[in-house]
Length: 185
Image (cartoon, rainbow, N blue to C red; front, side, top):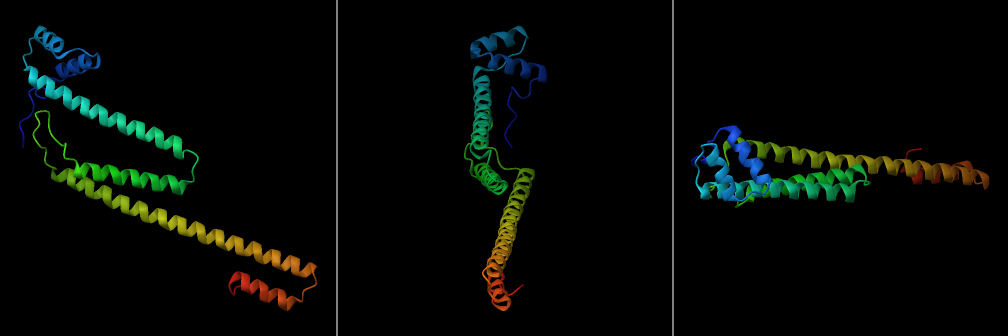
């Protein structure tokens, strides 16, 4: 396991101060000067690696937020099943991204292995993804069945009504309704 970065070993108040200075857009030298005033000594390269890590995490968060906003705008008025499918695809892409991510490194550029807990959480996420996909497919199938039944009943009712008005014999109407309803009258 890689050694913890010198910045992550600092007290939380100091790390918070570094974060505030980074958010203000201060240069590395300005941050180092501010830390020297707090009697904290870290190397410029450690601060640069930490800034790169923070920038990378911030970019991922911004990308995720932008993608979520775009998807909400695009699918905001879509039926639930399409939104559910979109969520499943989005989660699948995120999981695939995590698994295949070659940029999983700490602030010092060392590769970070996938720990057992993360592997378990990914496996759970994949399991939930599969269940959500099946539930969505089942919902779509059930909706189609119900829509087909409702359409057939409406068609049978129309056949019966029009047939009676036209003077078609009852046995013929019954046969037509059986044909429409698939044998169930």
